[in-house]
Image 1 (cartoon, helix red, strand yellow):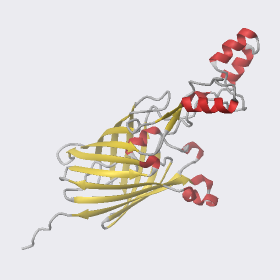
Image 2 (image 1 turned 45 degrees about the vertical axis):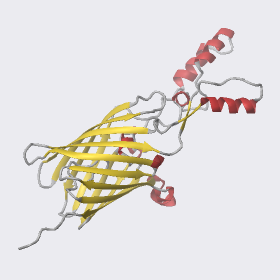
Image 3 (image 1 turned 90 degrees about the horizontal axis):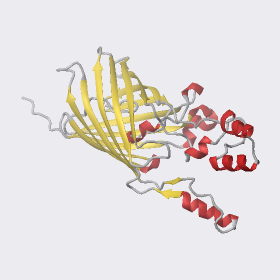
Amino acid sequence: SSLIFMPSTENIGAKNLVFRFNHRFGYAKSGFENFYGLDDGANTHLALDYGITDDLMVGIARTSADKTWELRTKYKIISQDSFPLTISFFGAIGQETSDQSYKYNYFNRNWTGNSVLDTKLNGDLNTYTLSDQDKRSYLSSLLISRKWTDSFTVQASPMYVHRNFTQEKIGNARVGLDISGRFKITNRLDFSFSTILTPKRDYFGENYTTESQKTSQTSITQLSSDQINLGLTNGSISLTEVILKNIILDEPVKHKFIPIGIGIDLETGGHVFQFFVANTRSLAHTQLLRGADFDTTKKEFCLGFNIMRQFSFAEEKEKW
């Protein structure tokens, strides 16, 4: 089974194949005019998982965001039947296949004297095209759950992600903790919740330097170190102007938010339907620690659903 963001500790069983179809829509706060985010298109996720044994499964998934492929595996280490906790290991390798590039601010010079040509040259020199190796990520996690009662289960999933390439000011390695729970309302209906706590998340925008120069009150941008040194030397700017632009009117770089979601799970025979609201559109497991898209403190969210269908290839035992 699956929680809102992470898989649960339970496996699908030997010789069982599970097909998953997950959807995350756009910004829902826009209301009926944008049909609560459905008009924005969806981030979709298709996955197949197969149980090699009762404790080991492997799978492959494809997410539309960044055209991401994931290979994944899960192994149940110990069960609550013989231990106070159920513990499983989950690992994934993610490969983004969309064309991606990153813009630096290394070059901003007058090369030829022609403004159009110089803009083109500076743009080309500042643009780095990511390779397939750059766009690869790795995730490992311990899934730790405990069933406190017949109706209530909690799971904590410490996570580690390594990204081969990241934006400026962002480390390649990141840790986080998914905390999820499920409360059984009826035999077929559950209430679920999930959040991912992480001390660091990605920032909005392409370039940290550009984002750090934005101001919240005016269109004035920060002065660069070269502008400050030259301006103070030749008297073209004052120290008061530097303090105003770089300190008083400076807006901190805006980072993404803590992912959080709540939902309802409905089981109907071989199908499981999950309906929920969340503040993130991310679906690939290797991308979850990058942070959420929407600010829940401003009542921003998106709608989503997951559909799971299980097929069994195990031979039925003859009845005597």
